[in-house]
Length: 380
Image (cartoon, rainbow, N blue to C red; front, top):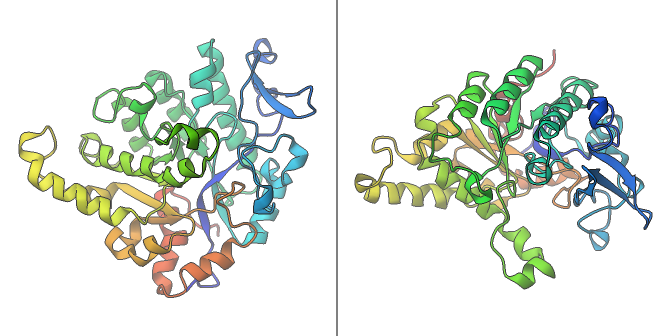
């Protein structure tokens, strides 16, 4: 069961950036073309970047609404909870649902910075936008309530050298993790099997910054044309496939062999599939390693124990099979303010999910593992 003194840590939530995140931080020459909120002719709000509507105003920020009123996108700030974009109201919402600390992914920039990667014409502007967002997270969002927010950074992943520099800069300011595309080859970049990312991975490992891979950051799962256009429940149901693919790619690549201190969290991918995937990957490795370019000495499931963490919201199958995964490789997430969130009943629903789990195992999964991975100790 869930002990009363456990401080629940959610390792996957989302911040809806307030209108001044970039206008307050970009150099004067970029203020007019950097991200800013522009009221549209239909009366709705929209992020405009370099003269074009960016498209992602507040993706699925529907916490507090009846599921019958859910949609992909609130269109105005006054159509969402203030806690989506105000840190003061966010902490009140966290207290209401019983969550002590959060790690928040970006919104306007995409889960890992894809908005800037896809839409930028001026790459210096794109780099400065990443830097401005990170300063907002470090100096405003997380600094307001020490111990309640875990600083997650973006990097300009289209440029390895600049990514390393941003890791160095933000690590010195207190960064705790970086977000990155889960399957870079799916978005036209080199895969985990190349040496392209080695400087980025080495920098992250050197500063003990785990990489948080949010599902969907490496492209969308395959679904029928009709499902993509009129019935996106298929795509939403399949998002865990991206995390499955990332697990196989990483465990059968050189990444963890070259970077033995690197840690990875699979955000919002669930955990119920992990026992089968680990069994299957081991089985394939045993039979096919001898004629393939893969490490022949370390079993993939052993690599998993040392390097990868799965994350769950409400995953009865995964919690039931937790010993096949490894209790020390599981973390909790609430997904505030998106539609998977249980807000404001997060603690209540979690209590039901772990009702038959021993207290010490619950404590690991919903608090201690996250504190250890993200170097985020309890406040005195």
